[in-house]
Image (cartoon, rainbow, N blue to C red):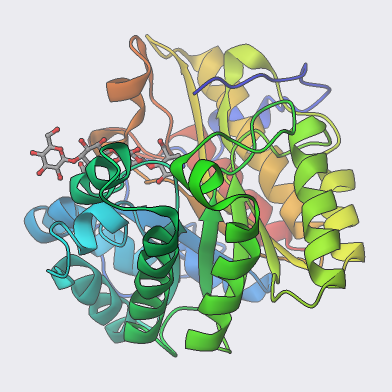
Length: 360
Ligand code: G3I
């Protein structure tokens, strides 16, 4: 995927370079004092009326004690990085594997965390039996629609009452605002989007249902396509309650313009907003200047969220470079998260911490 950015205007703060840089505490208990710098992010977020979340890599959660402790200590919202995706939960037709998703939901409940469900309808990480069946014609349009309905209903029902926000449809627009070519659009036409929201709502009427995408932080053709879609769906009574802004930024492309204005227009529709997958990558190697810019970008998105009453949660797409998806996809890039591979806090961690302390 490609990410285009507009130039950064006045976000860099030299103080971010020095403030609060230190080593993360491996303590699963969300305690500590804000003034001494030991209060976890979730305690500060709570005071600011915000959920602070992270994507969770279930293999790391099982194998890495420091990782597990930090997920529990620092965050009050979790998102499955992969284990709620279709290819994982239904690897063979009619054969389900809920083990990872169940484990995350249980982990969260024990720690008083909410769960963001990610994701029900996507063009990527589909099971092989489904893509092959559509490609060879053995699964036709009518059957595909009923397969999709069953998938959405089965997964949402399984976690009914335990998922706060569901990313119902993920990444359905191209950069120019046209609908993305996918098996869903090709076989079912654009009505699959409204159908998915209706099915999800029927399965768990209390879950907040989100559209979710990248490169939609600011006002642009893609975010405007979402705005128009949301407006139309809501006018038709389709249960769409939230707009999820992933927030995968890269310092070499600049900071997106008009982020507060973008949040405000969705708020005016009566919708919630959320930052759902924030990370800020850079061309390696990292240095002090790049890390300061990264910190300012994290802070820029967080401040936009804190500045809008519609924005209820701010989720990072992993909190340690040790398990970040970035280097595997963007060769030569990385260092995209709040802490290093050794969990040492970067200026970005301090920036998020300061932002939460300042509050709304
Ligand atoms: O689970 C298999 C494992 O069994 C196998 O041995 C291994 C070999 O490559 O692959 C494993 O699956 C990988 C999976 O991550 C779990 O590690 C997939 O190959 C790999 O493609 C997958 O990448 C994920 C990616 O979505 C898939 O598109 C990333 O971890 C995940 O961070 C990323 O997350 C997406 C969001 O869902 C949507 N927004 C963009 C974001 C970043 O791309």
